[in-house]
Length: 511
View 1: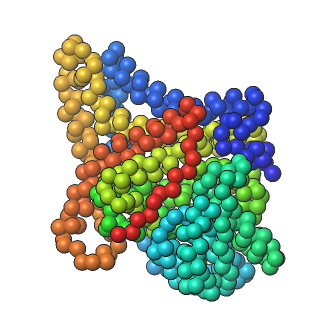
View 2: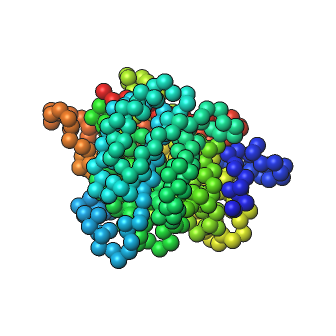
View 3: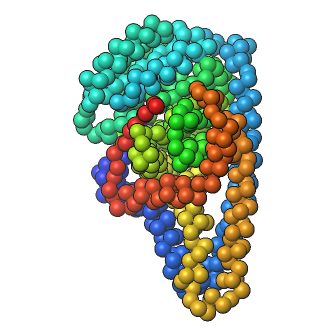
């Protein structure tokens, strides 16, 4: 096992060597120092050198216009590939391969905690509708001991309806308070997988190389071709054992029930993940994804003590194989719930918490930087390239919306009377307004794709409802600042000051 993975690191305090612990702690602080430092510097510079700040803001806004256009092409391309893949019969494609596809088994793990039985039934119904042979599907549902009373009832109901459909069906209960664990999706998923290996795969002597593990959120609904297209990729890509497989998460299951802010947030997350499919060299596992069982065995399931288990498993495999590991974009969708609670106020609170938990994945930066220092076998260029992308991504997540939408006015307020008389001060609001208007017009493509992706409502909706869903996109500046940048800064502050978080489960509410 790779040295880094053997340490089972979730934070600096997990490292016994004092020198290494200090280095790791510095890496934990780095993202927060960069983000908060940039925002503080913008305020200070607006007071002392307002002209250069105004010039920087104009250039930065123009840069983001071109960046938006650049991402727009990626979004369109990935969307078209996704639509094309949805049209194919992937089981037929698999059968046409001159390879023993019948030997491939799928282990589907479904960690759950206090979710309504309706959510679970919807997910299992989608698994039931898979066109891949059911005698090659092992489905494992994992409850938490902290929800035992509710879990027993739901488990019996699910087992009665779906237990005899698949090759093997397993129900587990993850014990509470295991030393060294952080309770959450990762530790429960690890418990499920280990039980499946010990109780099913090993007794049946199924080779680990023939098992693909799909880790799904409990609300994840997979189209009928999902396991077939996954099998096709697994049998056709180079070095399939050294790759994870990433579908496109669409947060659309309950999109008609959610308030506008939640919809805009869901579309933003959906489109970001869609665009990333066109950048495979930057793609990291997120949310629901699939991984070879052999890779999980090689890293010894070290996902029990982290919050961001979906990205951590990628980096663990990356270092286990000395950088020879990648994520394969599937250009194929899975659908999950948008954030929706009992009322609007709770929904807003949950959106913030969910985004903060996602942004807490900034903790992968110290893990990557520390591992890059220790692993001399990874090419230097790969370390620099992936490290820059990782840091830049979290930095812009936390700062770009604030810099674009708010700080353009700082030089006018802080630059003093002398600067206020200059030509650039007089034209700064007008210039930034025009640039931002152009940028907002760039959203037309995203709005169009959102209307194509939105599922048919269960009840007929008035046409004005569709118009309203288009107009909701005007909320994007508000959403990006208060439900993206601020929770990202909050998450980075946790790492900066060593106030570590636990795992927060997003409540699932179906109205």
